Image 1 (spheres, rainbow, N blue to C red):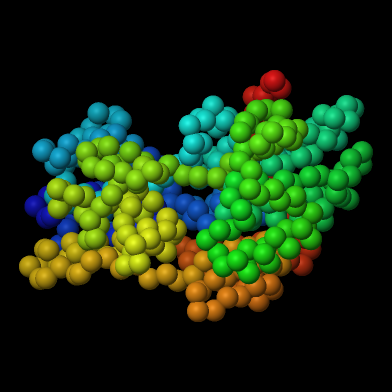
Image 2: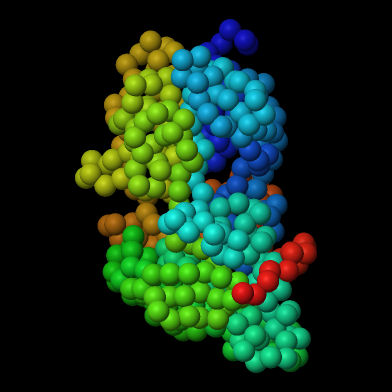
Length: 422
């Protein structure tokens, strides 16, 4: 085993796991490095944050996934650099992991556009920890509002602001509004949760800019029916524990969620290559790093152009396609065969939900909206979950909520240090 070609994969997301799955049976040994011990189905992370799903329903231990693959070794660690001369990955622990082929799939994190001081009061949504933090703050806001005597403070507690109106922001806003207006009213005695405000802020001219304008307009209409206040065309200029400043106006709001931008991991810096504005490594058309033919960069970490000149989007299907492509390249190299041509992204459609009964789907050649789109969205997401148990659990949770209107994961499981109001 030690003599086999050693493939090191940094990152256990969609791209990294697809690569490892497609290398099954190849004459390689694989080391997978991730700073967490689980693979996360990020497209449903917002449903953990909004009390619909439990954490165990969208995350799976990596070691369990590869328990039957003796050629795959898993390391819990955080990559901090790449020694291209020695061909080794350096970890935060000081350990060096040598490689013959390296695949960097280290993902992205939140981008606050130069205002990292906003992070404590406006958490993003990339990890399970983020989701449980948002869920805790949201539920605590209702609980604190129930006992708050001051009207202004109570109103601020019942105002929830989501910054960024891409799919994540729209989905969060819709579910929070539904929960406040339809799920919780009978459970509180002193407050009327239907008076809660959900504010969705987008600096651009319209929400869901990656979708066709007609679908964006439909989403606006559906959010309005749910009571969501949508503010477009004005950026956020400040975030504090007391609220958010949108342009020149201040909205008192004790629960803020950041869904406005991402910043790639520092893979480009590790490799000494050019990066785009979001920090993504500018890679060749075969997904190799310039000047480093044995190093591939995929997923949210990579920036590669499509045939029309636009970047490949940072979404799960793109990462999976890149992982599969790199696996084919590695196999071809080991077998002495011609490597596949340049990577070509095949767009499989864009999807987003608005509440629990409406969704939009943009396949390019066909566009869907409404209840039918919601069912297709649900079936597609259940299909891509890992394991029969997860598919059944998620399907049951959705069916229960659809029929009863009750969320099954409304638990405050951790006490958060009190945030001081400024």
